[in-house]
Amino acid sequence: MFVSAAWGSAFPLMKDLIPRLPVEDLLAERYLIAATTLFLFRPRSLRGLSRETWIHGIALGVMFGVGQVGQALALDHLPSAVSGFAVGCTVIVTPILSLLLFREPVRRRIWGGVLLALAGMTVFTLLRGVEGHKVSVLALGVTLTAAALYAGHTLMLARLSRRPSGFPAYALTVIQLFTIGVLTGGAAVRDGISVPGSVSDWLILAHLSVVACALGFLARSYAQAHVPAVPSQILMSSQPVWVAVIAVVWFHEEIGWGMVAGGVLMAGATLLALPTRTGRTGKELGRRDLLKVAGLAARALDGRRARREDPLGLQGGAATYLAKSACRDTGSCPWQTRSLKGGAEPSLERLIERATFIVRAKGTHGPGCCQSVTLLGRCLCDLMEDSAPHTTRLRRWFRSK
Image (cartoon, rainbow, N blue to C red; front, top):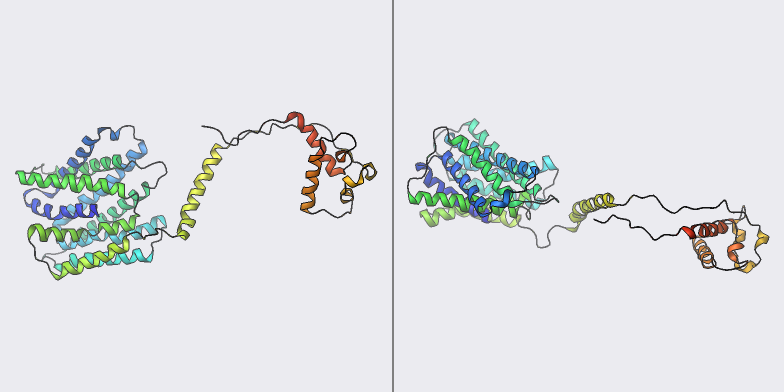
């Protein structure tokens, strides 16, 4: 909501400053000052970054910067209301791209918030009147493409924030702001760079740079790790509400029915986009998150598992078959008849009981049960006797760091 308010405050101030400063120059100066401000606060934020972080930051900056340049160039051929509505279509493009690219379904409650936000955007833009000049289809297509780039920027930022390798939000913000400044500056140098000519204009530029850009982008990067992409886009689509509030408070614009109706629709969209008190349901948690965590844990443990050969070497030949008459104490070996050909097989409980009896009688001297059991028991006794000299302590299953 802070990002929405910060970006919303930029529109009336830019509208006041654009007659004295070209929009291309304003965008370039705005983003370069924002990036420089964040860099001066933390000059070491760009040290030791991986190449992957640089690539992601530049990609984010290119997506948003190309969208800004296209929107600014198309604004000369579109009414401001049409341009604002086309940019506001980001709120419905985001869930569509999420479904097509990442197969991530959107809940019906979130779809309701998307539709309410789009309706509120329509009230704040198209229904308030369109200036009397033609609408360029090419300019409209460029603006809708910019909206798609903004939606892709939101989705990419949301997916990067969930990476297990970490999310350097501050560094990514600085990199993408510098990238946006370079792109918008390339469009501005065609006819030279203009700077504000008064102290009041510099103050407006400072607000646009520090509050709207630097703090707005930084807050968005940190918050995106806690709010999914589509709900966050719904929350940020409430910018027209803040534009209307600033227009009424600072510029003394009259409150009309469009502001009231649009504000109610945006408020409903915001309520639907807010996370529920219990968060995601256990069903969703079990199907996605737990499976993902289990897969990561399995791969991590498999990579740390010590693959060693079994050091236990058994010696000795085959165990000799003992006849039934070899059992001197028939009361101590009641299962001899079970091993005879055609005899009944003992149950699992009987087998466990038999193995326990053999282990306990291992140290018995003289003609004990371990010398009078049948073939299966004799094999177990021989294995135990052969392995006794080679007994070693158990090795660790996983390698230490």
